[in-house]
Amino acid sequence: MLPSLLRRTIGGLAVVAGVITLTFFLLRLAPGDPTERLLGPTATAEQVSAQRHVLGLDRPLPAQYAAWVSRFVRGDWGSSISTGRPVRGMLATAWPATVRLVGISLVLSYLLGIVIGAVQATAGRRVDTTLSVATVTLFAMPGYWLGLMLVMLFTYRARILPSFGSRGFDADFLPPAARLADALRHLALPLATLTLVGLGGTARFVRGAMRDVQHAPFITVARAKGITEGRVTRHHILRNALVPVVTLLGLSLPALFSGAVFIEAIFAWPGVGRVLVEGVQARDYPVVMAATAVSALLVVAGNLLADVLAAVVDPRLREPAA
Amino acid sequence: MTRLAADGRARFGAALLCAAVLAALLAPLITTIAPAVQRDVVATRFLPPLAHDLHGVLHPLGTDRLGRDVWARLAYGARISLGVGSLAVLISTVLGVLVGTVAGTWQGRLGALLLAVTDFALALPRVVLLLLLAALWRPSAALVVVVLGVTGWMSVARLVHGEARLAASRPFAESARALGASRLRLLRHHVLPNALTPAIVGAALGFGNAILLEAGLSFLGVGVQPPAPSWGSMIASGRDTLVNAPWVAAAPGIALVLVVVAATLLGDALHDALDPARSDVRGETGAALSGS
Image (cartoon, rainbow over all chains, first blue to last red; front, side, top):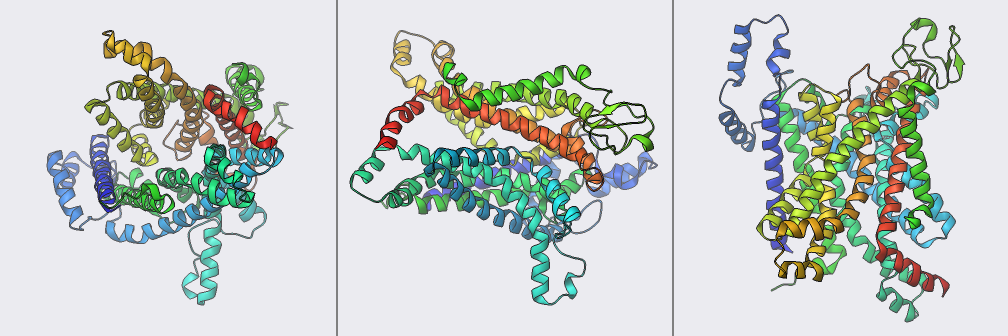
């Protein structure tokens, strides 16, 4: 277990390094740079080149890259070019918001997805078909559109849930209980959107995995031994079907994170995705680099967590002690 | 093929996709007005579905805030969505089949390297890359096609590689090797035909995904640029008018869901029909178990 975990960690760090490198060179090779936006269209060529010198953009690319990496590793993430705010501060407030949204929605969509998939695999044909139609529809639904429709229903029509940000403007002045309620009300719509969209894929996958296990010889043996049907379903079919599901959990993290970028844009959720989108639009190099690095780190950390979980579910994955 | 025709999911999916393609091709014939026409904006904006405007033109799905016909934009937008989606899937399928079959045939160092690259690319956050590429260069339909194609081949490569590896180690491939066939011949005549099944399934499932992502990029304003009608940018423009004209955002979203559902169902049905092992199990053991 430990050696393989170490190997995975090194592999994960390689992915992060790759993402950072790729982003760096994509950013620099693309036309346009932050000084144009900073100085506006009336700036003279001298002003632009002076500003580029101040920002260090006139140095050779490999030197800029090396300088950025060494500062990033030491914790000096620089300041935003467009707002002047320190990038570390921006991300320090942003990443917990993203983890809260993505983490809760991951847990919810997997729990609900496993239940729905298991019901489909064991129930009769009619229930299965009805639920299949529902899960395929959810699976095909773009998160940003579902989010808008929920906003229309719950914010504009029913007027019961907020659709903007993670807390009300008066949140600081509320007593603790009311503040919690306020946070939950703001969480409701983005969380529901992200969960519903993830749910469809999970339920479809669980149903398929259980169907595959259902006909394995050891299930026939279990039934032949006289074990009750409920016990066979829970302990023999579901347990074995969960192994690929947990692996899927790790693989679906990048997709979930991508989905969160759209959801954060819709609901003005103050997370990493929003920082990233705004940074990209302003060609804000330090912000984009740090936001990409943090999102890659979050995804890799989630993948490692899924590996550990897979070993918990499936004893065969635990390497025997030598 | 007969098995596919007997599958309700396949019939439904194929019928829906055909309808969407027809709507895209015949857009000028089935719409009452061109998609970008704006006349008296104040008099013709936010007309509800099935309303006639003061010029007597019928708007089956109403108009948006510039008085443009939503149904016409939907039909012309299908050209962009379906076109971008299918071209992107074509690129990613070709790339995926290439990487998968080569890695399956040359199983030594080259195969390991290709697999490592695939796993690496699979772990990259795709939307972040898409955002960067699309936002940094001048957004256009061609760029979206290339970007979606280049970032979407990994899952096809994984599917194809599994099948290619199996085919390359089967007796018929080994005897071809023993008879002195080159790797290239092995790849062309023995591995590739066997690897096409997962490629077709992967393409059908990837098509829905590509359409969703194209719309997503256009929604964020970094995809196909206005005034060209794209389903994603239609949803984005309907966002501001959710209160007084919900149909502007609802219509393209429903179209998107229907097309992606159709592609997914067709992919599922193809997967079951092309995988004889699975249907055999269902046919025999499945029947035996449910009968007992």
